Length: 270
Image (cartoon, rainbow, N blue to C red; front, side, top):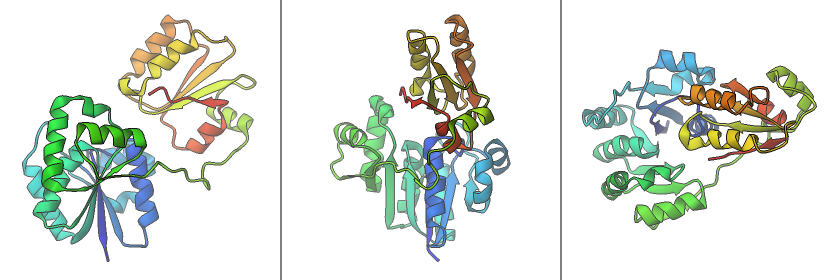
């Protein structure tokens, strides 16, 4: 049985992590798809994100501490050999550094690396580091959008980049009863609702969306799905702008089709 491993930085709710789970689901039955999380432990991850439960047997956690951990490369290379891995797919710079180097040490022929955004490439140190790792590991490079590919070509000096746009599971994400979805999410009926989903972090731009809300008609509401380190800051901003009755913090939502069904409009401010 073919063993294919995806490597992510962590398994907390997010776009990259959700995609990794979807890919593992689609590949099931065609081999032995596994996901390695550099950070975190199994018990904490499963408790924090119920969606991981069906994939529990496919998950490996390395509990990487903060900071550079060179020994992790050797640990991963030994793990790859023991599992007889055929292909490695890394997501983002951290997994590329550790798993990319480990894959080459272990003699694994197929190494794919996907970039899901390019904002981190504005950092000159990261540019130099990632260029060096790509030169050493020679992965097949994938970007999830043309804009990401353009930045990779410019800042990583990479020429051969495949573009695979993010897709939508149209059997899961379907139109539904808006009123029912709002009732279940405890959102107001009979008003336009703008929605945004994503980690509550600076790079996602929810603060911009909240500030914009103060300049549009009063009857329009905003629903934010997600958790993150800026939650308190965003709630304080809402209070300062007098938008408490119009902004709804929904926290982590596992039933995303229901969230989208409840909206009048979706906005991704990042």
